[in-house]
Length: 65
Image (tube, rainbow, N blue to C red; front, side, top):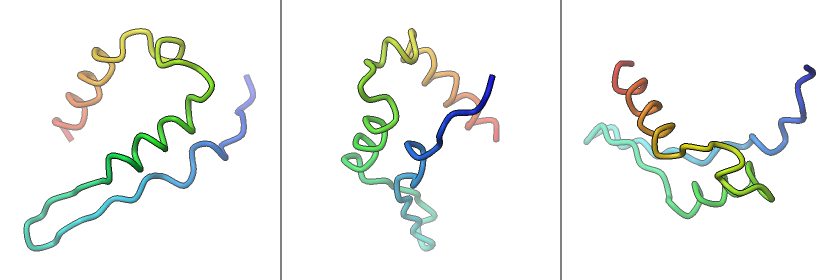
């Protein structure tokens, strides 16, 4: 299978890092716009059938990192 175009994936949403508090934040509106750009015109059920389970799995992986 050949890789498709990546123009929908980049640029990633901006991440803001506060060095004093060591907190990472993102603008929720920008993240929603990014996700919409990736999956549009598909619905989330067509991309990931079990979205909550997928997000839990990703969170578990990030927690171990």
